[in-house]
Image 1 (cartoon, rainbow, N blue to C red):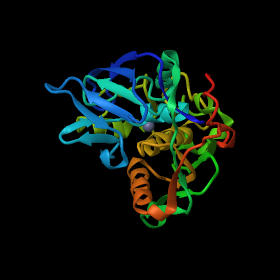
Image 2 (image 1 turned 30 degrees about the vertical axis):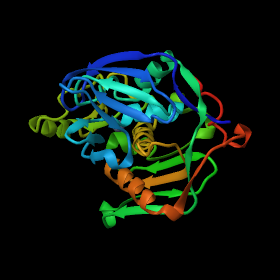
Image 3 (image 1 turned 90 degrees about the horizontal axis):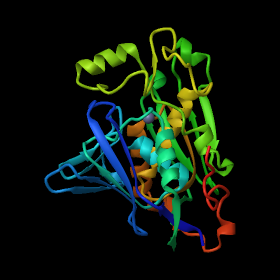
Image 4 (image 1 turned 90 degrees about the vertical axis):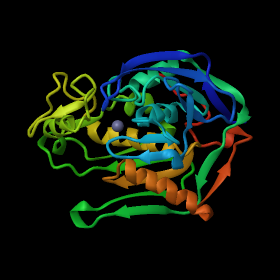
Length: 307
Ligand SMILES: [Zn+2]
């Protein structure tokens, strides 16, 4: 049987929120089978649980926010991406403020945390959402056009195309494809950092955003070049970060997808719209388990490789 996974032990990290600039501590704890991923705001007078689900995504400007009533947690996508990449199903995330720490701006620190705590197999079948018919969402026209879609696929692969006209981006790949069967998420995707432009950062700061952002946790560009002394981690780090984000955005579904995801200029908002469209289209998917794990798509049965 292909089993659900949680952590072997708990693990902690301290950092700052990208937008709030606030100090925040997260504690990742093992959870029982079928718990899913649950954020717990332990700083509130009465701790509030915020379970991950497509419908709990309440704000997608700049980052993905989950809500339960008035309780919120911002910028969940990089942690969610690490959970998707390592196949963690059940997890409590105790958090002491309303934004997940940005750490190094990629999913690598979260992968490191999860792998150091160790992954535990649980005595319950892992349930997948298998897409059986194409589902697509589109927005805008002409130069503003963007779209995202899911097609049936025995496995999980993502292809993403960006369309940034900027000297530092033009010279790198604008399109990338990643297939889980390569078992190379940690090495090829997780280290891609978020990116921004100095002119946008100044505007965001004026609006009380990006207060925790800087060269330690983002690729920052002026009108011509990358300002980070160390340059890029991958030649095509920008578009790889979009794959990283999409994996996190899609994992809020609560179950891993068996599908081929493709997107052009998509972002947190459109990715969430795609999930909601999928949930409405009940004829376009089914829930499956793999009693014989040899029949599971490649990349899911074995534990994820470290770097
Ligand atoms: Zn991101």
